Image 1 (cartoon, rainbow, N blue to C red):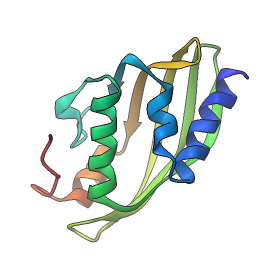
Image 2 (image 1 turned 135 degrees about the horizontal axis):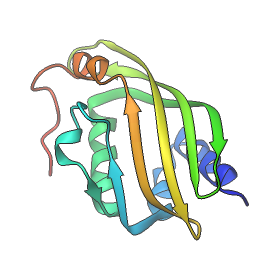
Image 3 (image 1 turned 90 degrees about the vertical axis):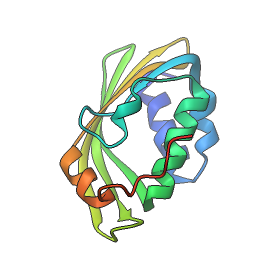
Image 4 (image 1 turned 180 degrees about the vertical axis):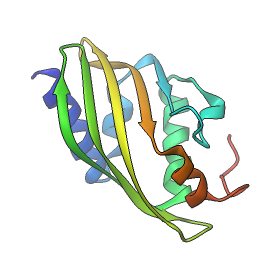
Amino acid sequence: MNNSAFVKGLYAAAARGEGGVLIAALHSAVEWKEAEGSPYAAANPYIGADAVGALLGRIATDIVDFRLMPQTFTDGGDVVVVEGRYTGTGATTKKSLDAPFAHVWHLRDGKVMRFQQYTDTRQWTQVLGAGSLTPEP
């Protein structure tokens, strides 16, 4: 399986609610970065599967019906870039999220080594509302 197909499989698993598939695909020392300016970026980089799992749990709590809709996959070998959209509703504000994203996946030997997110951080901040974030563990 090529890296683009591998990453497509991660999004498909997420759509089925199988978050454990992504966690299992992370290298033990994965470096995960949320977009600069994001409400979640203060803890960048998230290192390791436990930290990434906690982050994704926070997002699932803070955004009701959170969805990732990948649209374009660009396979650069060990680097795969995915463009798409996020949707959902802020749990506290009830504001709708409909933001574009670009995800840059760095892979090696069937594991995610690094991840970088780019998105409309202003929209995320408005949807989450000031002080509405679930406290970090």
